[in-house]
Length: 317
Image 1 (cartoon, rainbow, N blue to C red):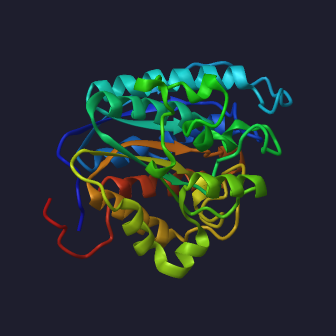
Image 2: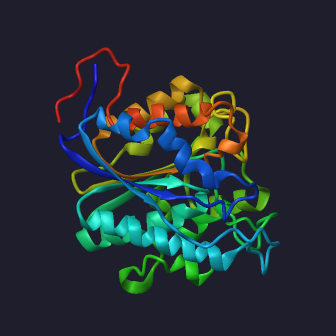
Image 3: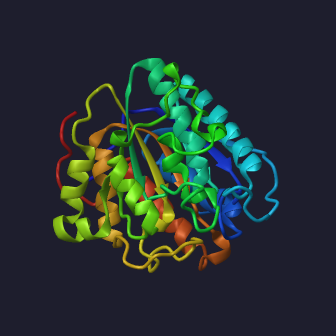
């Protein structure tokens, strides 16, 4: 049985080939690996009209040490401005943007664009952050200076103004309030980052919570409270998955969701009918095995758009 989205939904692929915010080289090759794994064809099997916009062209990675707690901040800002403009343009056309990363610092530009679009249209934004890491570091807390460990904090207003102000929100506030974010699959958090997550009140379904209550209940809680005015953004870091499934990432953390848990997560998002924008991040083909991780990511993303193993009649919308 297949649960399909609204017919003729228009989606756009946007490649962001950079590892500018990461601590390992290789995520810049992620967009092409996803294309090689058949992402566009997989989506088109589910009544999506997909256009590939090609790759954004930003600055090269200078591979320098941190300056004032940030590695490559000027280049990170430039890349995120490019992502913001590209994602915002697709949303203005009523299309569903799918950002192909690239490292997860680019979620700043993507989600800032979605937040601005929601402010423009009166929609309520909900963000699901599927990741092994909370990505809630600051320059004062980070052990590395890599900005791919900071995007959620920056989106919530904790970071340099060049990044926290990308959305240019009405009233000048941050792109997100912590209450709009649900983090799923977390299992690696730095000590100072952990304190900050608690102080800010993020709702986190870490792997212990998923072990205790199961993926089904975790996703029910993460998706609760949305309605017809809700815009659901999913930011999918491929290291969300257990390394046995997805070895091709720069920061593997054992103990992630099983393949079936990840499929259930994606299927329940699809069942919500609210998905309106997507990031696919941190795929590193240089560390992969025969494009295994890209193929797993494509399979799971297909489930976000209707592929289902559920042998039952889908609910009426």
